[in-house]
Amino acid sequence: PPNKRDTDRSVQRGNERGYGRQAKPGETAGECHFSDYYLSTPLRSTSEAMATDAKEAAGVPPALTREVSECGPDTDRFVRLLHWLNKGGSQFPKLYLKYEDEDYRSVHTKCAVDSDEEVVYVPLAQIMTTEKAKSSAIGKAIRNSGYVMNCSHSWLACYLCQEKHSPDSYWKPFIDILPDKYYNMPIFFNEHYNKHLKGSYSLEMAATRNRQLRQEYDGIIRRCPAFRKYHYLEFVWGRLAVITRIFSLDIGGRTTDGLVPMADMLNHHPTRQTTWGYSDRKKGFVMTTTRKVGAEEQIFDSYGRKWQGRYFVNYGFTIDNNYEDNDAVIHGSLSEDDPQYSMKKRYLGGWSSREFQPQAQWNRKAKDLLAFFRTVSANAKELGTRPNFNAPVSIRNETAALINLEKSCEESLKKFPDSLQTDHKLLKVNKWEDSNHRNCVIMRAGEKEVLMWYIKLCQEGRRLLALPYEQLAKEAPAKTQRFRLYYDAVIEPLARGVSRHHF
Image (cartoon, rainbow, N blue to C red; front, side, top):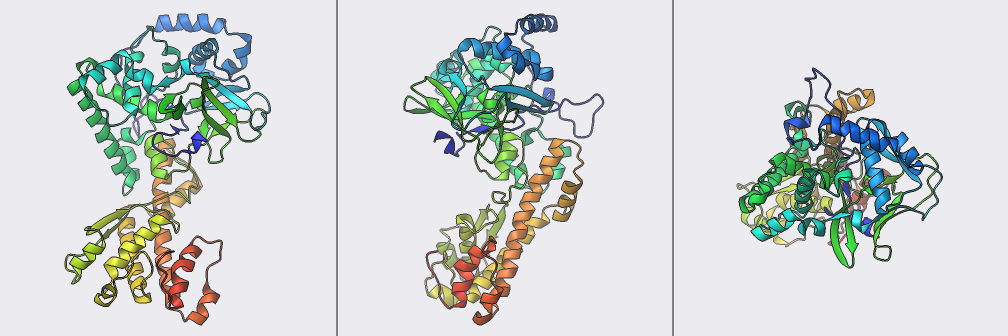
């Protein structure tokens, strides 16, 4: 199914939907007003907006009464959206939007829904696709300028900027429900939040994202004068709206990106409840349940398995207990003083240093990590046998590699000012300044947990490698432990005197 794809073009929407809390009067600690970043002219005066909202709210069709009643402070905006979707042919008769709090919206069922039941249909006319963006006035101006986008998401971002400033835009009801701020996105964090992330690779990831956005914007306005009317931070707003809501669709045999109203409101859950895609036969986007969902339950989509940094930096939220997919940065280097420096560097493909970002499990990334440290730790005799460092070489070499890997993990841990125990205590007490503070702690705790897992792997691996083979079986880890895969692939064969070159 199309939603099984897990790339940067696939489902990329934040489960808080970008609705950051409003800063309270006089707030100083951790305040982060999007007005500091996004400057735009209101499309309507306050009196015009109130008059229009009252008129539209008074004329809500009976079929939409339930949807509107649960929208809380967002009622006026969602009335206009639902009118627009209903008029355009979109269908979601068993779902309604619910206001949970100022940071969280959700989609719920009005009644019990069976498995394999269509719950959302949005016709092509109401899907904002990359092709529509390219064929718009601003899209044509950019294409004619000769500028080549670095990221395909920029087409839709530029189109959103154009349409946001057009009072008569067809897309106005949809654009009006998009967040006007992204308080929860790390690229907007100030020093107050960044201090909670000291040592985390998410800081560099957010800085890189900021540089990429700036480069894209500067490139566009350098070649296309028509886009200079839009502020840089309006472009950033557009890019964030896209990355947190986009679907990858196959329309008529061509892959494209699209913003799909209503479907983009479903929040993330690791256990998939829906599948989706574009139906050429129905000429629209179709979302179908994969299991039964009870009445009044929140219905979820899954954004796919991702490492915590992607959830955090791309979407502005973190996943609790994301143990299998949390990762951390581990640096490895080959000393220029090493007597076998030249030979080892050739084994390493010309690299003398590497940065790894593995999860806490024995997979391809972990194997590449150990291969590097086996190479760095090899002696002249081992190099003389022309070994395959992707496989265990010897007990001596594996022990040395584990010692050096543990040192590198310890160096990464030292970059964090707070201990993992401190993070776990904070998570247990569960009292936070706001959701950003909690996300920062979950992010950094996940990295430390990965580093601690590798440190324990190194320590336990060395202990087991020092045991006589006859005693090893009694000390073997349980088959349910993640460490068991490393034991079976490396420790047990080495202890038997067998080196496997492919495992």
